[in-house]
Length: 140
Image 1 (tube, rainbow, N blue to C red):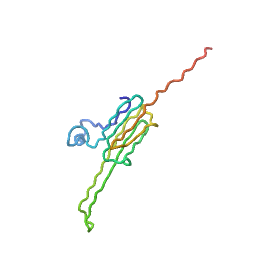
Image 2: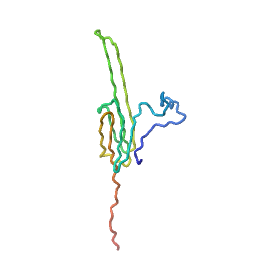
Image 3: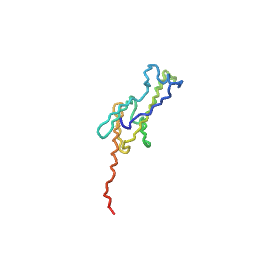
Image 4: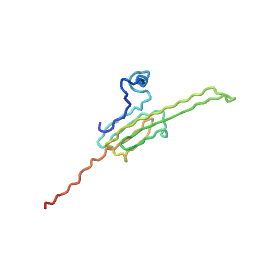
């Protein structure tokens, strides 16, 4: 696929944390990875990222030069207290995703994003190729 490649951390064989990054399931895919499908259509790419449990307000998409960075961050506190104000149950959860994509060849000014049912759908139109102007040279 032309131009839409995710940046990934790849530290190699000598990274002492490489095993920890794979986690319990040992499948190479991080449990908290933002799974993204990218398909090419005639004049655009369509990128669908799974962000279950996030609200639209928790998600940001930043474009800087030829890089698009998708971030999602959510925290939640559930506190239950008895009538004396002592905790009966207190649970906290935090989740975040961050992923960057190379958008070379994309018309960054016309990217469109929509979030529905835990899926962020972005339409990334391809840049129109610059056609050099033609002119006739006068012979002297």
